[in-house]
Structure formats: structure tokens, C-alpha cells
Length: 165
Image (cartoon, rainbow, N blue to C red; front, side):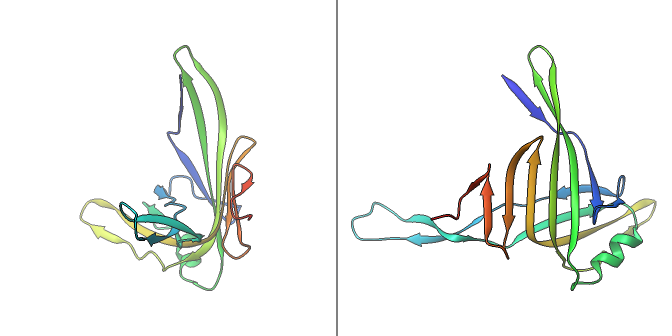
């Protein structure tokens, strides 16, 4: 038996701006297919079936610092932003930690709004942003786990084009 665990991650904006220590949490959401409910005579119940499309993807970031770069980027809804999340997968077995490999997620999209934050007495400032993703790529080591692009009509899971007829 093996366990692949991730304990931490770093966030980078547009490939160059390191945001190490600025984000407390990143929620990548789900790749969720659009489903249509089907019901017909003779069926024992209802059935949900995929329509061939996907729901809009949202990536949520929780920030624990006031970062002017993120603020400026998020304040302009007309620019596409690219964020990279990098983590380290540690594989544990009953005998040892046998392997480490990078997990890299690259997501592109537009921010929903600028993080104005919240303030409380003697507590650090926190804010959240939502990125409406138009594309996302996820790799673990040399394995391409996911490539999804709404505008290019691409959805590959483990290298397989799941939209191909």
C-alpha cells in the first residue's frame, strides 16, 4: 500500500511573481460536467447523464497578506491572469518514503473582483479572491493528469481526449 500526500504548496502569479507566504489556502474547485436529467416510461427512476459540456470553473484563493500585485491584478476584470500552484507529492509506503515528485497546476482566467480584505482587532488581515478559470493544466511528475480549456474545446484526462467522439 502507498499513500501520496501533499502538505504544502506555493503560488506564483503570471510565472514570475512568487507569492510564497501570501496565500493561506487555494480551492481548485471541481471539473464538473453539465448533467441532464432523463426520465422515461418503464424506467425504475431518474437518471442524470452528461451533456458533453462542463460547468464554469472557479478557483478560490484565501490571502493572509495585503499584496499590491494581487490587488492590481484582480482589480482589472479584462485581463487574463495565470496562477501556478506548485506542490510536492510525497509517496509513503509501510517501509519508507520512496518518492517525491512535483505537482504543478497552471490555471488561467479572470478575477471576479479585487480583495479589499477584512480587519479585526489584533488579527492579521484576510481576503479572498475568485478566479473564473478558462483553462487549467495539472501534471504530477511527467504525467499529464488534466488539460482543460473552455475556449479551445479541450478536455484531456490522463492524456485521453474525453470530448472526442
